[in-house]
Length: 615
Ligand SMILES: Nc1ncnc2c1ncn2[C@@H]1O[C@H](COP(=O)(O)OP(=O)(O)OP(=O)(O)O)[C@@H](O)[C@H]1O
Image: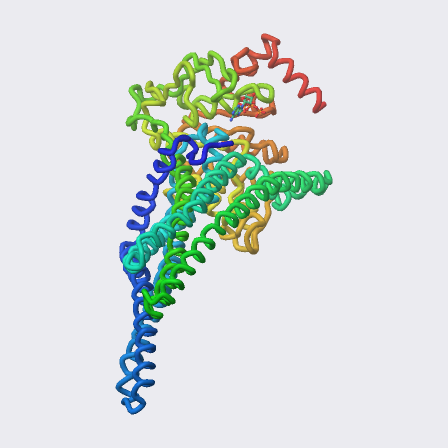
């Protein structure tokens, strides 16, 4: 059995208290979000905390006032009725005022809470997304971090407010409790002790089960993510085509159900245990209340206290008991919220990798690109690139050829500094990429990856993303679309450059694979300042005429630039100044098309194989 009090990292009783360290940060968040509402919450809390005891006290005065008025009236029927009952009626009015004020304070609390919920949810979501923007690609590919991000997004945006609400709720109940205690101690200090002892067991069981619930949530987040993934596959237009044709619905749906059933079994067990123990231990509280009830009744009959005092003590005991158990439940709830927040802050405090240096210009401008004995392995993976050396000068074109998985795209990821080499170095204009300022480096490079993004945005913006400084610049869109050969079909679309693309939003138009590729190509042309252009299989979905056109234009536009082309089509590769044949991460042949044919190696073999296919 897990220890009673434990945080994910600390299993001692200390860990239980340690876990409250995030309460302060949650309060800080609310403070930053809205100071006025924080003050408002504090004020309403104070009012809602103090007034119930005042109400109980006035209640006692009313009962005693009624009893004494009845006696006066019985003893002296000639007494002035108005004079006798006016003080009691005044007390009734005061009680009504107190109740109205409590209602006002509670409304104030709930209004501010719901406004804060929206503001705080937005703030935390923005924090999560901003952090996501600073993570490196390899951090994104780390499934543990991804789990943390998903958990944070799913839960943590509501938790800070929950924590703050509970903190204020606790404060309110604590104030009520103190004021009730002041009244109750006058009856007997023992009554106070009975009150506390009756509520403790429920609290301990709640705290234990909150910890269990959190550990369960944390442990199974991979399964929850799988569930989310299956939902996406089964209900998104980009996968539904294949799911339908292969008849995958029953299979995936069954898997989805199985995961749910497994999770639900655990949930049910925990819920039943939590509620069962809650009920049993709660009985203890009921028992103590009725014991105290009996005691107060006996004291009243014995004449030690008045009828009004009896009514007050019973009310105070009852309300004190519920305030105490609400406080203890709030504490164990805060413990649970803190555990969830610990996940949020663990994510937010992920170290971001050093984002490069400060160079805006290389030590040898015009030197071009050099790979010096570069090797690379993905985190936790085997070596993917080995001892790669190459030099590309401005105006030169390079083509990479190799089997699937040989490491071509990886080489581009290194060149764009999405990853750093594990060995060796890459130089641009004589300076290590790691010393370049990231934005200066990225400005120099225009890339389209095979898996470019099909943004569900208007056509123009789909081009504009290529250069955020010209995101809305229609003249630049048109120029880029012209270079990327997308202008002719864009002009035919219903709203031209403002036509929504994709099927997610109203009036969205879907494009063909080749048309999307032309959009991606045009996007690369948006980067006017880039002098390194990289095309990773840019024409795989295009027809032969379009492909030939693309390369004619590509050569025209990149005359003084460095170009890197990855392609499985030798017709597009053959004109490159330098062709590298990569096999299992190593360069096995290099040279021009003619030179490579002359050595009659792997390149020549693959070239002839493809040529034969066309004959
Ligand atoms: N993000 C990643 N994490 C771990 N391994 C990866 C990752 N991406 C690729 N790999 C592995 O690195 C190797 C090289 O992949 P890469 O994508 O560079 O090949 P490629 O030559 O571009 O292939 P293709 O012609 O199919 O596009 C493969 O064995 C692949 O499994």
